[in-house]
Length: 340
Image 1: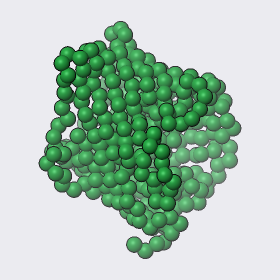
Image 2: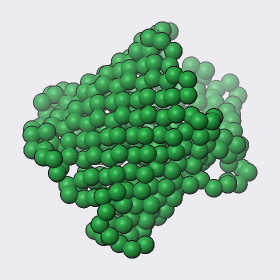
Image 3: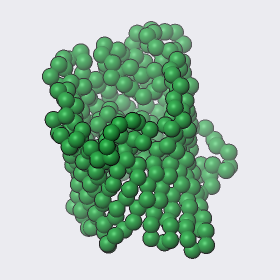
Image 4: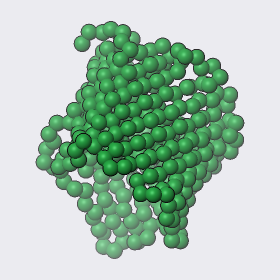
């Protein structure tokens, strides 16, 4: 592939036929009357060819290798443990990553009264809606800038969830960091998220985070989102703002998808992100427009995803866009994903 400067990014995701064992359904195993365990896994590999001369021309990446076990203990308490060995593989030319980064989720939950569940451990903080989606169910291979930067955070803490009818709320008091990050104190951040589903296939929600010693001016997040499915059409929108000391940021994501057949779904995404509202100029605004197609292979729990993106002020050496002023590039990515 010839290296050159382009302002158009092209991403191609291809899933090939998998061995027969990939089609097996995940089973729940019982140990006497004491505990159950259900194993799950999501594997995704990318081959990336990048046409921007400022970064590597080609890269191979194991994006996800999530291995999860969940179940119950003594018929009342639930547990979840998940690791991701792919996180230990450094990017091309990067530094070695500590082994402790492999641990993602570990929690113990119990329903104290009907509708109210308490969880303790390391979990995703209830922030952006897309950040809470499982990686295996994403409608495009990578999360949006808003979903990743202002959400998709795992933190140690205590979470309380309440669900009844159309109302669903979750609040969490946390350390503000994952277990593999150093820091002081176990209770520094407070997150709360509220979701409503007034009619079938319609939901909207909002969240607020007050962090860094429960001081919004030092660390704060808030956002809104809405999702609506009617017939074969899917509509999604999410807006979020963040504050870290004197730096403020904001972002917007909109997505539209349509199921032509039960296996074929074109998707369009528009996203923009301002990393610093005070200092932002037109040249530092990150923006991406993506057109994609999802093709599901349910007999193998795998999928094909083909997407083309126009990227502005985003560097993308590994297939995951990051903020980088003045960088525009094009890339080709081949991905294989399977879930069991």
